Length: 411
Image (cartoon, rainbow, N blue to C red; front, side, top):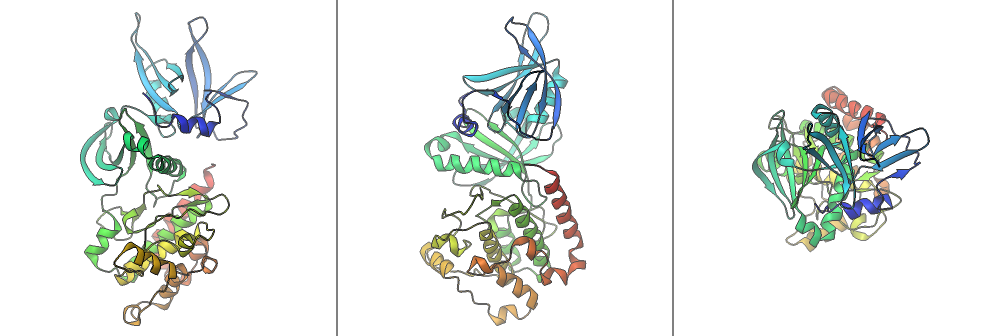
């Protein structure tokens, strides 16, 4: 199978060779065990291998060989032989693939489970049952699916490979989305569990958020109470503080990309769609995002960083509190012009029933000048939150758990 990730793998690795030698990676070991490879004498030779979050490593007395896994295709197989079937997996791309053997099916299942969230997998039909389509975008279709071995439900995003070949921007956004989401482990960020590739499609196996998106929810509710938005806001600042700690900017925070976990409450969500996200190294200049939500510095071409997400979050909260967009217009051009000027009317008739600290918090997020916006970590200590600490205890416990996860994970 020709993989759309083959060139990306070569560019990321800096070479087409399968093995890299003598690289000091310093990563924590996830798993270790024995694998077998066919040697020069055509006999299976046993070797000791260890697995980290980025590499499969083979060690012996003199050298250490390792293979980067991020964009490698892993394909399990069964070989029929005269004595008994031989089990294993094929790793790599056409022309640069290696076969690894294991003693039995149980060992193969262990290696597959350990490597499935590190590699590009195949044969999604063996692992998941597709139930029904639940959404559609410009370049992807979303399906509700069940895991074959436990009936747990997931959302599977399917992208046709023809579109990836025809439009390099879609492929670039997809690989960026995969790379960023694999780094993230936060209770309010949609988790990417596995990536699959077939002859025709790329599949992303994601958390299923059965409550729909926040855009649909606000249409139903018309407007949320301040207490509900307080809970949602603290979680959103927790997410942005977490992403900032990883030097990741989302760049497309909007109602449609905030997915509600259930119908049970209006503040438990998962942030989705990392197609425009990027790791911040220095300043960014790329103009992207959704009109009406974009931070002014992106539109004007000023160098920016992670604070653009705070502005977009401010637009989300403004809509939830008032039921209105801060930057309206009949055309996209009109919206972008008002978005750029950032003239926001905090009408007394709307805001009079909300607390001053709530207004202060949203006003801080919607500062036109990014230098006057506080960072997400500091905003978690805003008076709006501190004066309502007893209401936020459960949410703060979740945030504390996310912080511990961030500290333990080494990227």
